[in-house]
Amino acid sequence: MKLLVAHDGSPQAGKALDMAATLAKNLQAEITVVTVTPDLTYPLDELPPELAQRLNDTVAGETQALLRAVAKQMEEAGHTVKTVSRTGRPADGIIAVAKEIGADMILVGSTGKQGASRLLLGSVSGSVAQHAPVSVLVVR
Image (cartoon, rainbow, N blue to C red; front, side, top):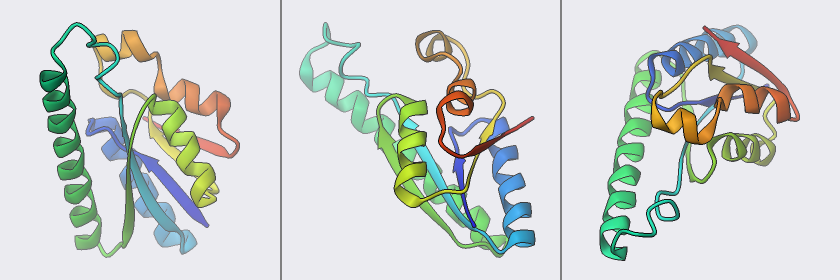
């Protein structure tokens, strides 16, 4: 069995990761953790290209740091995980990775990052649950 965990650094994503660890132990499942960050270049057309690129590079660096920390945490708990980073609409990216790896289930936190990103992106967990080709476990 292959589990895909969507992680954005939020506490709820951490709970989804914990649930995946429990399931993986009981089901002998593989875990892949995906983080999808929005492409900040397009909404920021009014910024100079160099500044927009620096902003995207900063976010990409933070994403890689998050994935390294998650992998380390899981390895210390006795689990081996694969990590994937994408840029784009989070729900679309999560679903695309699920298809690519042949995931049997996607785990997402019930709420993720809040504020302006939620207004712009909508509910990622809701969109994933509605459009994913596999079962989705929304963790509270």
